[in-house]
Image 1 (cartoon, rainbow over the protein chains, first blue to last red):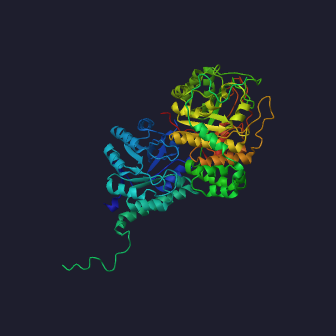
Image 2: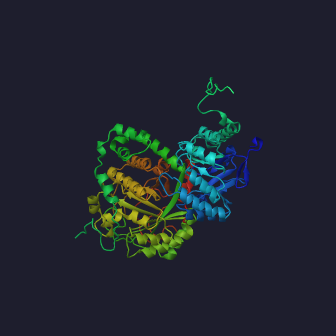
Image 3: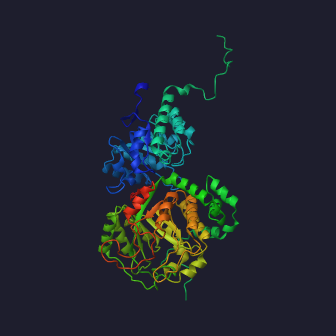
Amino acid sequence: MDKNNDNLIIGGHEFKSRFILGSGKYSLELIKSAIENAGAEIITLALRRANNGGEANILDYIPEGITLLPNTSGARNADEAVRIARLSRELGCGDFVKVEVIRDSKYLLPDNYETVKATEILAKEGFIVMPYMYPDLNTARDLVGAGASAVMPLASPIGSNKGLSTKEFIKILIDEIDLPVIVDAGIGRPSQACEVMEMGAAAVMANTAIATAGDIPLMAESFKNAIEAGRMAYLSGLGRVKETGASASSPLTGFLGE
Amino acid sequence: MLLNHMEYIEGMENIGSEIQDKVISEMNSYNPDNYTEQDVINAIESDVCTVEDYKALLSPSAEKFLEEIAQKARMEKQKHFGNSVYMFTPLYISNYCENLCVYCGFNCKNNITRAKLNSEEIEREMKAISKSGLQEILLLTGESRKFSNVEYIGEACKIASKYFRTVGLEIYPVNSDEYSYLHKCGADFVTVFQETYNSDKYAELHLGGHKRIFPYRINAQERALMGGMRGVGFAALLGLDDFRKDAFAVGMHASLIQKKYPHAEIAISCPRLRPIKNNENINPRDVHEKQLLQIICAYRIFLPYSNITISTRENAKFRDNIVDISATKISAGVDVGIGGHSDQNKKGDEQFEISDARNVKEVYNALVEKGLQPVMSDYIYV
């Protein structure tokens, strides 16, 4: 790992920032300052929010040079996700797509099976597919096989701000999956974002935690710093600190003579 | 002789759902006076709102804790919707009605000017509305299969799809195959007000027409979902009967439908009785603003993921505040008569008197001034 050239690479595109910012749930006028303070280079937007012109069109508020990551929210199955992704491309939102397939209006948990199906179709059509998923290793492997460019496991249900409920499963994905593992949904505070970065996540995506803060740009900056701190800790070899505590002063293997 | 209001009549699809019985038995077992202040405190402090918590939040004991309940509702709203507020307007395309609902301006015995819009007039109205920047429309009719049949409504949906991203319906209940047809015409959301869930009271208030058949109406949302609609809306007309029990039934009904159809998007409306033409004395009785706020907050806490609509039955001040606390959807530029949006002369009278006549721009600006984000579109028809 080249610590001096530590870029996030997704589908061949390089990014310096490891913070993917959401654009929902807060005022459009604040998007620009949130992006600037977050140092974000990628911003997600729900395609269903993107108007074809008219009032309050989110696309008018996103600064130039920022990579759009349109999501397929509203899709209840693979077929709908594919159609929304194609519409996104037609609207000029680029080739990146965050596949979200949700058929539960209460908890908004992703449907992994349909997500794999949509990923396979869209990857073949040349999209850079970043699927939102429940952190299941078998699904993650299927997503790799389907042509995903990253996997985006949830930390907790969307909007819950409950933090890392799925920590152990995300660790498994980080260990086993060679694609960037981008932790998405449920991160409630910067310290939690820092923790997932320390664990070796490639990036963090957050929206509600920032949208519901008293000072949105300041919270965006706080997340930026936390994510950078977590990444630095990971790169510095934090993984070598034993989770069970310090080494015993009398090693169990001290009897060995030869 | 009056029809038996609990028996389906010919042509009405009976889907044999268990939801009606569950809602009614839960409602009948609910005695709002049985809940203590401690029950309310527990409900406010609870992480997940159980049915018992919901009952406590709707009880008279909860009125003392209205501020705390509003704070909790606002937190839930922000988690799920942030500061977004969705904007839409209703379009009444016909006010002919075959029902005899004693509180409604459209009832068939009320002497009002009746009218329906033809295709050109519908298009002209929609063009005028879409110029205001709105991208969501709710199509309404009086309940007359004779004057506004399903094909007529379907045509209106097709025209609406040209001008709006989201098309909702608030029409008489129909069978699932008819909902399926309307879905194919471009509609994806269906709202049906049950008015009251007390079937005896329902029979007293709905003296004639298809609407008199209580079970056909209560099962409408399920038929709409069977027909492929994405979302369904629920409401009791507050002030007709015991509002606490009716509000409880609305939440219970919505929650059971969501459980049975997990993909369904759920919406709640919270109408209070309003004066109508030829009867200025109709009022929401014991449902004052305080009680209305309590109900809307209880809806939000029990169903945090649902959309809650606030109509122009309420005044501007109440509406602007409730969308900051609990509601997520607000109408603007409203005319509840027939043909009042374009510059043609209005053709038909209103369903009720509205309390907030502001246009789209005025409501939009009021939301922005409160730090809220007006949202015109949050939907793609796929």
